[in-house]
Amino acid sequence: MSPRYPAPEILDLPDDIRAKVLEVQEKAGFVPNVFLALARRPAEWRAFFAYHDALMLPESVGRESGLSKGDREMVVTATSAANKCLYCVVAHGAILRIYEKKPLVADQVAVNHRKADISPRQCAMLDFAMKVCLHSDQVEEADFGALHAHGFNDEDIWDIAAITAFFGLSNRMASFSGMMPNPEFYTMGRTPKVKPAI
Image (cartoon, rainbow, N blue to C red; front, side, top):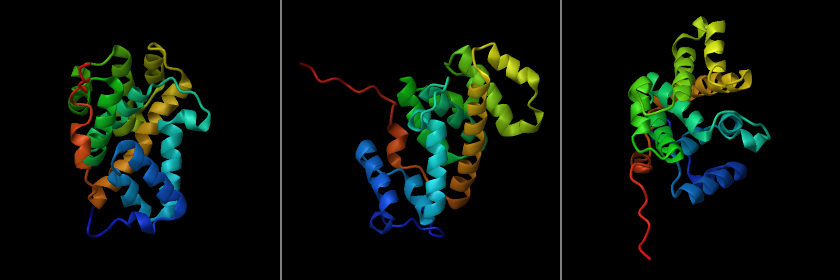
């Protein structure tokens, strides 16, 4: 964590935020640094994670999405790499590897999604996400047509753009504040779990 912006202690968090942090810790086995780094401003923490969950866990708000969990993490990983955000590339790359069950995919997508082991549909999705990330002023009707040809509807396209835009904010907050990825993220999803012999 940054010495300029020290993270609060878990015991000092408001009850609702502490409960969520402990829930994440129970599930993941550690507390991702973003949960504590942003908790220094509780109102912003609540707003950030409410929007995060609406985009990344649409089922939690009763909304369907044509994007899989892996698709959503792929958008985050590719655009975070374009924004040079170490925290988000490492953290969301780990989640991407797990959802896609491909230990190499996050590194490939972060460096050059057009050479990655992904489907043509996912490549089109990332082409659009990168355009929104780098040149949103140049999005035009043809971009929608290219995505429609791969089965995306207009709501799916909104999801791609919204995830890209939201993580543009996240990338910049993580980078300027010196937020570092937890060491646990680096190895997650890289090697298959070995099933014990019976």
